[in-house]
Length: 213
Image (cartoon, rainbow, N blue to C red):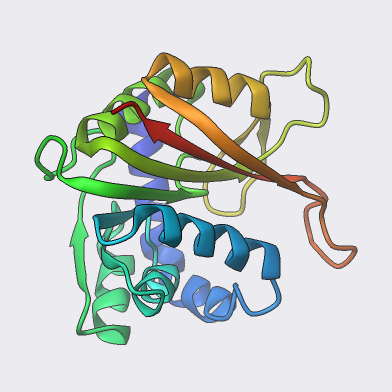
């Protein structure tokens, strides 16, 4: 699937599912203490720098970062998601945009959050997104990125049938190598085993990376 086709399919899918998605995941962090812990670490290392939540969806995690004291804004490719985010959190800034071409100046951010927002991107196109993350981060800025892990480390990526659009799981080591190639060095990682009630029994991965000073 070409990048344009993947983006169109993803955007249209999330536009159609926006209201349902917002309802299902509004309290997504409530029962995820490890997720909240990683977001807390991210907030602490970023400090007073500006942060972009890329692939912010209906804005709930953006609002969580705001409550942690970060100067945060949200970006998503889905206009319907952005409209819901603006309605729910009118004091925060949300914009429609693409991770491959962010309307953000070079080096303007102290932090980038990308939480399961690259999963629909065909793997050959992910390095271009990581390069854009590197561009907008200030020297010493941090990226926190989340995705689902492959079942076998020998599988660099695995496609799976997501309800909105085709999606990809990644080998954590392989993704960390892509980060290094993009100038973002791994600082820490968390791998969380699935809960018994989770619909998909995938490991979840967070990688915290830092742009060189």
